[in-house]
Amino acid sequence: MGRAQRVVLAYSGGVDTSVCIPYLKEEWGVKEVITLAADLGQGEELGPIQQKALQCGAVESLVEDATETFIKDYAFLAIQANALYENRYPLSTALARPLIAKLLVEAAEKCGADAVAHGCTGKGNDQVRFDVGIMALNPNLKVLAPAREWGMSREETIAYGERFGIQSPVKKSSPYSIDRNILGRSIEAGILEDPMTEPPEEVYAMTKAIADTPNEPEYVEIGFERGIPVSINGEAFNPVALIAKLNDIAGKHGVGRIDMIENRVVGIKSREIYETPALLVLIDAHRDLESLTLTADVTQYKRGIEQTYSELIYRGLWYSPLKEALDAFIGKTQERVSGSVRIKLFKGNANIVGRQSPNSIYTPDLSTYGAEDQFDHKAAEGFIYIWGLPTKVWAQNHRLGAK
Ligand code: ARG
Image (cartoon, rainbow, N blue to C red; front, side, top):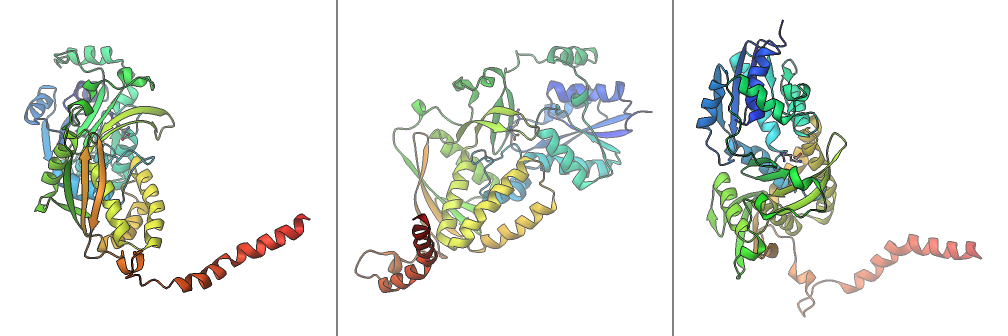
């Protein structure tokens, strides 16, 4: 029988996804497992991972370099949306999942597979993002999630793997669960599960401790074209290089750490540590440039859209009609969001200290308190009379009624 014949498995090279290979074959009767590892700029060599998959029994091991697509088609949309889940988390892990889902579906279609598989457990958000993303892209593909069903502890998983020649992790594996890509690192578990425990310095890799940051501030100027970051200090960068460079600059000043309790899709709270230096700086700078170039009503209306957009990314609805509709709105608003923003990085802070745009609708003659003032002060009186009229009528009536 078997649950599927030919399966494309999302593969990271870790114990869990490695054990998925023999497990799918032995326990679930899958004939052929093809693994797919996505390079999203996690700074890890994927060659050895490819080898490892074959040793674990995969018939074929694919590696896809998708870093540029990740930035251009996923991260940049999130930046244009100023997407922060629960106002804090810039979705660095969440954004990677729909892209991996897409790569899995494309590979399955190319290889004639009847199912795709992933190693997520039943407690996290990532299973939701994979499953829903895959069903949106190809509702006919089966999705297999062995780790959601096998019920093995960490030790049992390692022991199971050893039966099939999968080496247990050489060094004592990290007590944390870490996800990483070019946008950032997400760290959870171990002592971090106590929400009152301060994360030890060892959990961080992209950002410096304040004690080790430079004693002089550094200024960076980010250039945007239609809501997309294109330059640093006047020098043009391609998307991947821009993120990498800004991660370095901001990380060096200790910028980009987040320690939060978040609400997962599956109804539980979790304590997560993030470091996302470039992404946080870019969202802040982008939001600021919007305040210079968009009208008040568009700016304010967009805030609500941004919250919905962040939630749909977090909840696995990247490929959805709502996301497409919101993209149309956001895309329209970005037509004039060009210019540059100046940021001062110092001791864990990234403060915006200047902004300019050829499309600026900030009008000095109207805003100034100096002699050049063009604002018609007298007009304010009539405006306030009409604006305040309902309040005045209500107050008069209220006072009478209160007697
Ligand atoms: N909580 C984050 C999210 O749902 C990150 C989860 C990533 N996994 C990890 N091992 N920390 O997007």
